[in-house]
Length: 94
Image: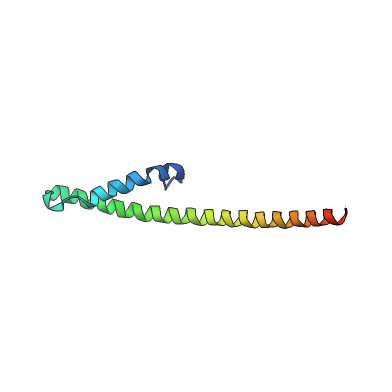
C-alpha cells in the first residue's frame, strides 16, 4: 500500500501490521524445526526489506505534506495581508 501510495488504506492497516509483526517476533524459535527456522528467517528478512521501503515512502510523503502545508501557510499569510490592506484602504475612504 505504501509502495502504491494508498495512504488511507495504509493507515487503516498499520495497527494490524504492527500486531502481526509483534506476533512473528514473539514466536518461540526453540520450538521450530530447521525448516520452520528457515521460513522464519526468510519472513524476518522480508519484513526488514519492507520496513526500509515503507520508511523511505513515508519520509517522501512527510516531505510532500510539509511542503504543501508550508505553501498553504504562506498563501494564508498573503491572503491575510491582502485582506488587511483592503480593509485599511476601505476605511480610509469613508
